Length: 142
Image (cartoon, rainbow, N blue to C red; front, side, top):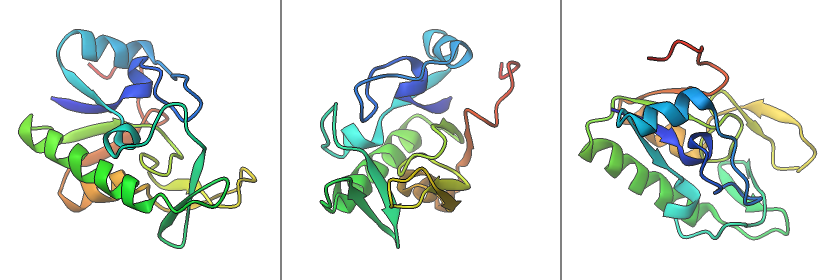
């Protein structure tokens, strides 16, 4: 079983109320091979919501609200879902303050990327779950 970002599964849960559906990931969910999650929603944030970015270990909304607590709560719930379903792998949304792996936006809302992992990605990695982003996968993910 694979954990996947709900937005990649075609669910309109991104900060802007949109999705970024990828046919191969949608197929995994339909075939019962993947479980979609949105850590931000699981942490109590609404959709749509203000965009947020990571800066110095905290997550800030564009207007300056500290939403680190909601992101941390969503990460914990996501990890619990992964454990309950035996997920050893996740495919999550690149550059997100929750789901980005390797590169995330820097907190200036200027589009600048810095090295780092989103809150959920780091929690999953710490728990031994392998994480990739949609940019790392090929069309042959079956």
